Length: 243
Image (tube, rainbow, N blue to C red; front, side, top):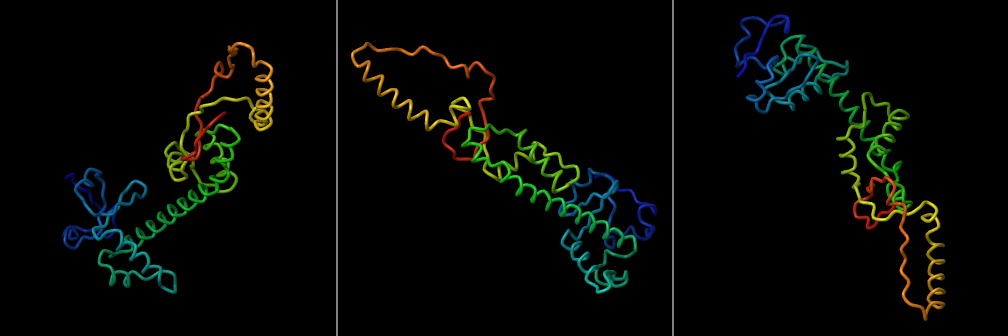
């Protein structure tokens, strides 16, 4: 296990008599390798240093709640020391304030990201786009998410990473589907009218050519000569996809 460094620069209240492991409750961690041997210790990164508590995260939260439960907004050092043995100086109170602030920042960011995901899902309209034959990809989700964040959420450093998009699709039941049929936009929008006209045409042709030999159609579609991804995003369980 790597050695841990101590000095009065990291803790103004530190002295040589404080090295007793039974009485020392708060320790500064400078060797990351030591984490492998410390089980059930709560680690919080604050700037260049890391703080961990042998009592665990629950007691740290209790200390923060007790510290703020006073009508004055904060309790005194003597009151905190009587309640929690690991708090022995103003330096430890300062650490609790930093932890409290860092937790508030993380909680606020998580709340904003959840709100963004809730706002993004109806904006995508996956089902309607799928029914309209509009292809949707991860790049489209990223562009819309970034636009919503700029206009409404204002979450700092949000980049709509690939991992975030994959988690979003998993929660919303969005999967990648292979496009099995390519049709033109005009034919797609007029599919009902074209279907009725085609049925009437086939009926008329069969009536006229009832005595003729079999006719083979050798026409080729130009859609397969164009560049398409042949995939699109759709809701899980959808049966057919066309573009």
